Amino acid sequence: MTNAQREICASWPTVGWTACSPEAQGMSSALLLALLDMGVEHDLDSVLLVRGGQIVLDAYYAPFGPGLPHALNSATKGVLGALVAIAQRDGLLALEDPILTRFADRERALLDPRTRSVTVQHLLDMSAGFDWDEQLTGVPTTAIEMEAGPDWTSFVLERPLVNPPGAVFNYNSGNSHLLSALLTRTTGQSALEFARRVLFAPLGIEGARWRSDPQGVSVGGYGLSLQPRDMAKLGYLHLRGGAWDGVPLLDRDWIARLERGVLDMNLPAPLRYANGWWSLPARGVYMAVGMHRQVIMVMPRLDMVAVVTGRKNYPLPALIDPIAAAVIGEQRLPDDGPAEARLEARIQELARPAATRTRETFRVADVSGTRYQFSPNPSGMLSLCLFLEADPPQHECSVSAGLMGLLHMRGPLGFDGTFHSDPRAPGPLLASRAHWLDEQQLVVESRLVCEGIAVRYELTFGEGAVHVAFEYNRGPRVEFTGVAQRDEDSTR
Figure 1: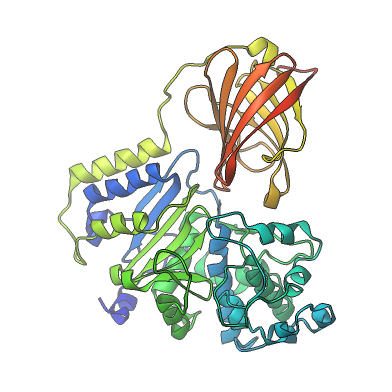
Figure 2: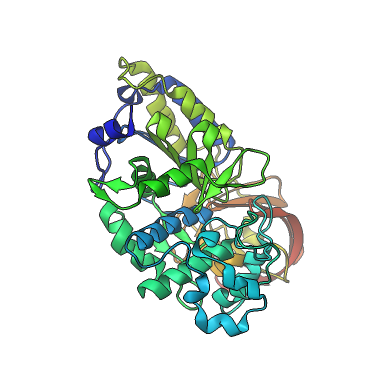
């Protein structure tokens, strides 16, 4: 099917998506079961497929669920790229503009005069040349340093250059933050406010969340949260050549640049980069990608948009291959009632897993209500208290969460093998489950449901202390000890 034919057939989910069976769009329900199993293996929170303008698969892995926003992490860069494209279209900026035309007040503080040669395009392509350590498979060291400072824009502008602008790809969320600050100086609005007006409103996207820096600049490299169905709208805009319901929002040349990529990302896979998007041209795929595989994937050859959220990095072919395998052709397939029923049953099982154990009661009396305080440790955990005699059992913790700041969280503990949460509790949505290994050892698994963060800690209780073995999907396993301090109310 040609692009022109796709546009004629296009439906526009501005108000809401329509759904159909996979077979109605030439896909196999039976083969899509392999994609759901891949999601279990690789810790997905959700997977959504759109073909022919209709949802053919929409699955959620508990405790994440429909209607919840999910952190996009660095897939935010793809959305920011679209905003720059719109600003360019409207004549508000040019990609060849030196960025210091918008930051003239910062020029005196520059450490490296070559910064005067950095353009908007260099920032989009991660080729500005700044000294920056943000390995895609490691700790974002320089981004963490940026977040710790009072002025993120100055932090980036004052970095020395280690490569001439435009010469080398080097992944750098600071580039994207400068783009966001540049948009604010150009439009008089934050990136979030600008997006609501020129991008989210036309697509019918509501309820977007976007973190800001100390000056109120939307975090350019990450920080945006959207529902998966709204992520799919952004992918669908790109799939349809940058137009939405007959209104052009992005230029076709912009889309073509994303498809082919312009810079090698210097990774084992033949990935390329352009304007905030990754591409695998040989596979006919381009995508906005965030840490732990938050992905908006556009697959023009298959007339497909795929959206996944999750909690773990994995090779991208592990996602692409089962999707492509389930595509039988462009025409409607015969209905396959038994396979469709199996697929739906599996979706329901993932969304609402059955209880696997009964509640255990080891050590409840002498542990419940004891607050444990921790000295500084690599996990960031400051305090922990279990209220095991409450109904339902609860836990409460304070954590210095790096890029997310200081978090105070409380929520129920599921002792039946499933994650329990309380949407009314303050702070980020927390879901947790727990089980006793023996009379001294309790294992707690927690999820920050909308952030894609997973934590497992094994508590070993002793006289007046607890030893913690802490595992986190964003860092190594660490161990530390806390000192007990009894709470007055142990049954809250």
